[in-house]
Length: 260
Ligand code: SF4
Ligand code: FES
Image (cartoon, rainbow, N blue to C red):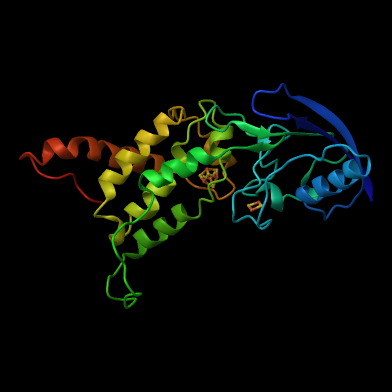
């Protein structure tokens, strides 16, 4: 058991001023998750009639993407490929004081303390991140063969949990890695082909409307991503977007963009 010193960003609302508050959390064990440390802190605060720290969470097993926060300057904290809920005290630098902040991006306004509004991601998905054909009952598994390479890549892209760490890490607050993952996991599969170019055009359009920045190849998104989504998917997004822009002109007589 030890004591962990946290400096937590406190802010009552989007337009209220915020500041760091220093807290000492007692009886912390190496095997506690970071969210459990915040739970203990909140129990202590409640006992003292102090407003608990607001933080987002749901699954606590790295699959829902809700628990985003910046820990010691890094989205999701110091451990690679790990969400904040799966970060444990033993992964934190021994004896160090820990600074905890919300995502910082114009497109993710702060709701309270560590909670931000990631609704912009939902609106990007609503713009095209789906397959809208009627699927009926489940087809026979081998009726539509999918090349192994495409299936593997689509599965890698589908690992994105929509947490927003890529936006928080990027100096431009770009959402390109998120959009690239969502566009790719559908665009690589046969079922995603009919809407492939309309999808990428609409999702990029909404991404820009929501105020996310452009990608300038810093690579910070990939380094921060807890699901290790590769920036190769951004290259794929750019190729599909270019094809989406060229498609109307090409279909006037010069041929279709190459699939792949
Ligand atoms: S690409 Fe990675 S960092 Fe970005 S939202 Fe998806 S899982 Fe989170
Ligand atoms: S709480 Fe679901 S990913 Fe962390």
